[in-house]
Length: 256
Ligand code: GLY
Image (spheres, helix red, strand yellow):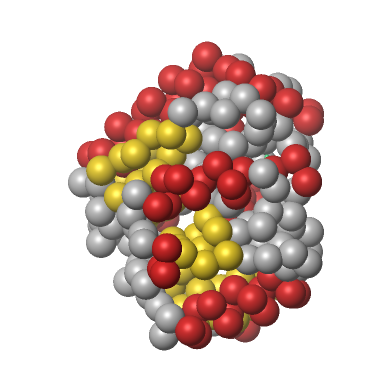
């Protein structure tokens, strides 16, 4: 169960955030704020306390708080984001992490290692880590060493087609996993009850489980039905403005 969630309000500069989908257009900032409000309300409905950090205009992508930190049952890990324009976000998340973890429970990924939290998928005490354009071999080596120091484990997953691991695969607890694209055939996920997401709804593979409820992006009926068919209550949240920046439901929060 999660007790806490950390989010950061989107900044006006988000319209200059990194994107691989410029054809979707620039985000509408006011609409993004409204969607963020709805996201926070959905999280609260799932019984968590939400800590809302203020917007940070220096970092256009800083609303995607999942990337500069990873929080486990045993420790918090400040990452070293591989995207140059995002790297400084790691220094801005530490204050919030210190509200929940003492210094001996805070670990750091150090250069030349890079890692972004979007590449980390938690399955109980095991963490799958995507080796991506943002997360390198040394970052993964350090990350797994930290996990093992705290009695947890991790393993690497290679990826080629998407930004982050959780862009295409997400664990919904109870052995259920949403998989799309290149992750459908990954042997390491064969032991899970994999629900294959159709190509045209691939964006919605990024759903989040929060205390028994699954938050699903609005506008993806096949994924909504698949999640309901697994037996989960569903809350729909429109993330259209974050999608324009390759962002989704998981990227927008740290859940622990
Ligand atoms: N726009 C989110 C990211 O590229 O990290």
